[in-house]
Length: 215
Image (cartoon, rainbow, N blue to C red):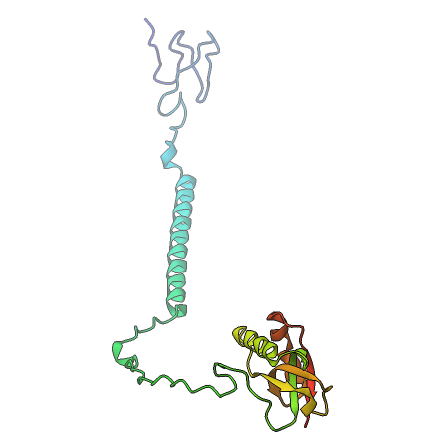
């Protein structure tokens, strides 16, 4: 019985000799088995025994270490930059720096002053003073009528809140047409002042107008 594998590289089926590295038997066509050293050939190195592989692994390891070191250095530089550029914290204000509250001195409210006679409440009609001026004529009543009618008109003007209301006889004043009782409101130094108060008289229901009074 033939040996399945000769000591010097033979076919395990037919025993035909085989050269190193031969893959098939030249006699029977059997695929020749490969041993750890190869069929009749030089021993094959395992994958981890290749020098080029270890060199590649060493390069990859060095590259990884370099990248890790670069990241760490960059992070430290960024932290130092942020610390250097950060605004200094302000110290909280203490109560000692705050001004003491002050109490405003009590002020005496101004005392009301007595209104002038022209603005005080008027109880009865007045006479025209001994001077020239301007006034607002409320009504002109012929002297053929009773003076009482003129006084009633003056009292109605007083109840409406008009001031310096009075009755004069037009015959005593050259600037007026004689023969009338003139009911007036206000004694003014200028036409403008009289015109400014004209609206108050018309609002009270009088057909008023401005007239110059001269002696």
